[in-house]
Image 1 (cartoon, one colour):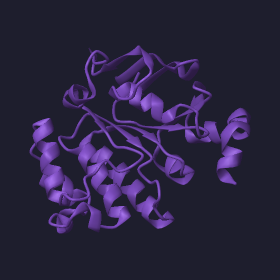
Image 2 (cartoon, rainbow, N blue to C red):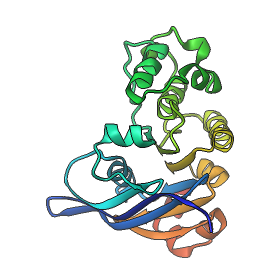
Image 3 (cartoon, rainbow, N blue to C red):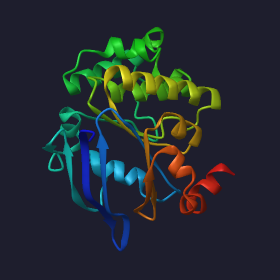
Length: 237
């Protein structure tokens, strides 16, 4: 049986009378890339926020990382415990250079591998450029680099290919798969680009209306009639 590195049990978040995530439990095995997909409003980003300790509302659930409970920690301390995160909207400061942003993350996490991460993500040549002046694709890679500083054991990626061209998305997905394999990083990824999801994910969890609709490998998800009706049919159109 695969070793479980991240376990989230009974994850729930309510905003007034609306339940965005409803008693969701998910286990992620060490070294896997787990996809998290579903229609808009399914609760994907909210589940990621719950796991990493962000967002408001009334929240419940237990999060265990490498056999240690972290749900009582705030987001900053969960990052120090080994839980990286990238965001749907790039989490960068446009007036800082690429290198300055990496250095900030190094100081926050106590890491010292920023130069290596920049080199791996083809950002070293851009290190002196203002983040606001580099291309959107480069900004997405910078956001990914910030999540990978210190090589956290688990990284949550929220739509890393959002806004990228098909070519850029495929390049990013190949890079991500290569890095996770070489660095031993476990990934939970939310992504609307099904080509990315089906090409890199070992397992895929489907959310709908704040609950888990299905879970399986790419072939099982693509062949699940309920998933096709709820999401894949419209996502492919």
